[in-house]
Length: 541
Image 1 (cartoon, rainbow, N blue to C red):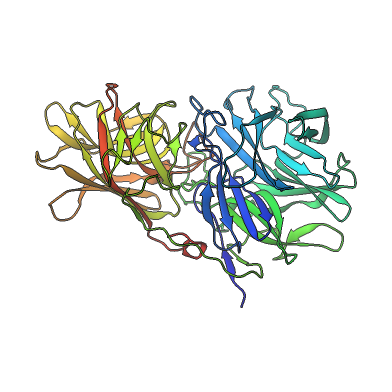
Image 2: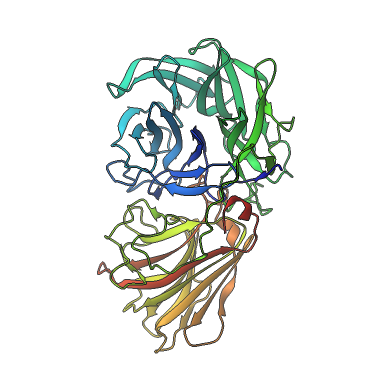
């Protein structure tokens, strides 16, 4: 009986996938941008079910994101394996919304994919999206795109390759240009060797709805490379009705049985559009898999015979290996935070949260405001579907309006909706909504006073595609009360945001104390559940 892979396999913000097989285990590494810890690695044994197992960049010595702008930070990791060692290459984009990009590239290694991972080795700063190629003779090479800050650029697409010495832990020799063109923009390059050819895989035409996947080949590593006759071997660009848009940025894996699959990024759009006519993607860019085949003349094509990505794909001939489904509610009863949570730019550590100060609760100590790129007290997880509910139970005693805690839906520091408890001079303890849309702020519900004896407040957000409705409940009272109007959830999307447009939306909890005295908030639980079950076959709740 054949089984099907249901795409996306990694739902919600999981872009720029790199795939690897070691024995019977498959791993996908994806970008995390300004979210900490850096790089998500998922594990599978059947390509159908996937489980998040680690984020290797979990120390400031490996990854310092303080001050990093929205959608900067970790771009396009490359995960490889050779002779008992895992290699992870990544870019830290320090500046991007300027002419001169700063894109240092690093390498870390580990004997066990779950870590600990090494301190980083600096590679180069030619551009972003580098990858590591292990040649058959044992030599290793870094291939990278090259950014060009000049007003009049010489090339649209420019790729270079340079040897890396694992013994010396540094680049050696001179970089060699293997692709330079005014016609096609390429990034995210990977090199493979098969049947006497070196194959160069690269994402083409940006990362929006015109995205695609290109392929070139050469008899020699340094070229010259010839392009696949159809240029993009996979793209959604001419088919806006496909469920998977933005298809591109691929990487290849072969099963033990000789079947080949391509992992790639994709997106599921809303019909809401920006003023420029672009569709909005609140879930960001996600990860999908396509079955591929080698042709008799040594090129690669999708197994469906077209260039269009499928939402369902025949799975490989492997035993199914599902993972336990996590409960929707996290009661914070464990000694550590669940791996689904990340923080913004700074480590998840005791400087801002505790699971032991009040057992059974997560205590967040108030820190800087939601616009801060340095020290926020915020933990959040990805949206996985267009219809979901997020909720939290909060106990918080603010003494002034500069102290807030609550439930947040956030894209970046300029775009969020925040249902929170605070203090008002005339009303005392109260509940309010803060709306930020590209740094334009409003309070769509005003301030609603809370009863003096209302110690425990339940907060809830319900998202239905482009609609968001907040509600709350005071412990001891029946049911939830709607607060504020229906809000535009589509403003939390790649295309709608002015500063950053490469990530995706998160739901989480946070606490601010703008007085600097770290007033704590206690959360009894955080809950997230999808109201559509398209992800259930891939191991998601």
